[in-house]
Length: 405
Image 1 (cartoon, rainbow, N blue to C red):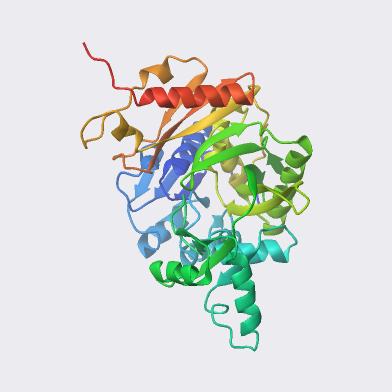
Image 2 (cartoon, rainbow, N blue to C red):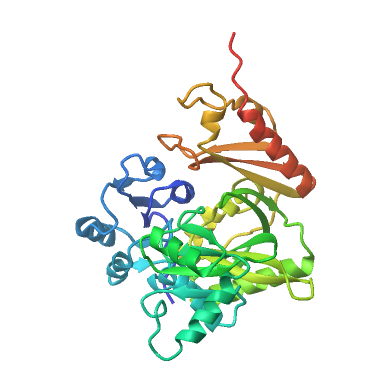
């Protein structure tokens, strides 16, 4: 059992994006001191940290300083170098642990972990140095399985570093799959069969080192081009499916011995009888885009809970403060939709700010770019449908040119 870390203890953060920004804001409000390590001098989280170490994530000097000055170190993205986490963990509390992060940041390890622990996943095959060209007498079996997986369409995903639709290719034959792997530079990949997807759910699980767990109401997610577009809470699926989703996500957190906030993405698909069933899609070892709604419609946000979990001070209430809420992402494309030229134009924020049920969040990123997450809007309402409709309307209004006198 580790002693709880109370203010003014120092929290270190690997990564300075918007997830780190909100986590450090929560930590600061609670009285903690914070240090962020991020190589970007304009990292959004940096303005909310007591110190910003501008250095690569594997920089020995920066890591030594983090280890010396921090009481606990966490991360806001899933791809910190494993060696860096292990180096920090040798002398400092690190949460989530490097073993859990290593599994969640590698799709091959993740799929195998889930399958080995009995969690349902879709048909897949991993192509890496141990499985791409087996030389153990099972080549024909391997080739037949691969052909079956891609026969009705499949997605080739890079094992590491892929997110928001990056590092993914749709294929419909084995030759196409090999072309996709070659185009990705021959990296290790997971090939997943396309599924009869009905919807995607996500469950946020917060867990402390001593095993205390809290979850939030289940979110229903919609994507565009592989990027989360809208999240609606509570999810509009059968109560039994939501209960099973929470049960599954909680069991995964326990199996990983996870500490912090974990996001579990779950597909609702049709089984062979046409009935709804659940398959685990991916894990995110950090607060998640689909949990941004907790900032405005939950007693405790996922970011405050992350601080509580990694510091071991006790988890807080996750009840909703509104009947329903929807979150819409604001991508950099929005800055280019209102203007006639190629230069970005500031969206018309007035309509969002004038709606008392809506909250605007901008991440403070220095430059809008297409497909870059620049902010989000949350809207509370009496029903999930009403929340989603209003959130989409407000986002559409943002692209209208600003009226000037």
